[in-house]
Image 1 (cartoon, rainbow, N blue to C red):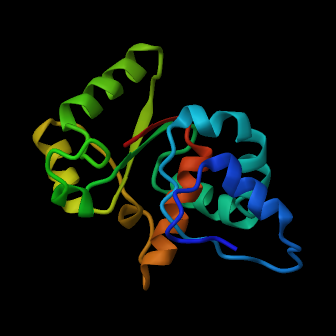
Image 2 (image 1 turned 135 degrees about the horizontal axis):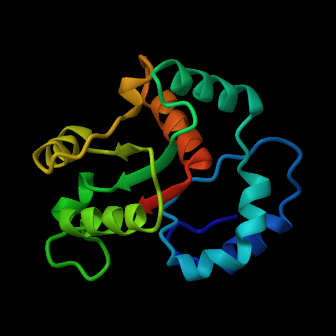
Length: 171
């Protein structure tokens, strides 16, 4: 139903999905990099469509509690790097300057967040972890909480933690 050569808008993609006679789980792949102003009208749809099973949320909370992060405010930070570093001077794909991320973090902390833990998710954890270390900012990643056999499990933990985070910075 989706022509990969067509540049879909979010409303037209959602309309096309609604027309499907979906009787089983479907897997939709693509680059859904819409400005958040396009996503906001569909917030209830996203919340109802993408739900984390309670058992997974409970397991993640259990692990967070076991490593002394119980009752802490979680600030999730997702930083895209990977293939974006290959698009120098692109008006569409760019990596967010780390200073901007740190400024956003300072803003969140200044708004009253106390006793927080910073959760870092990225396609280039070693690079960003070193940036946080140099800045003297402590953060944790999925690897601090679980051992993984595959990337899908790590992404599921990231997604789960972002669903329970008190604040997020996403690039």
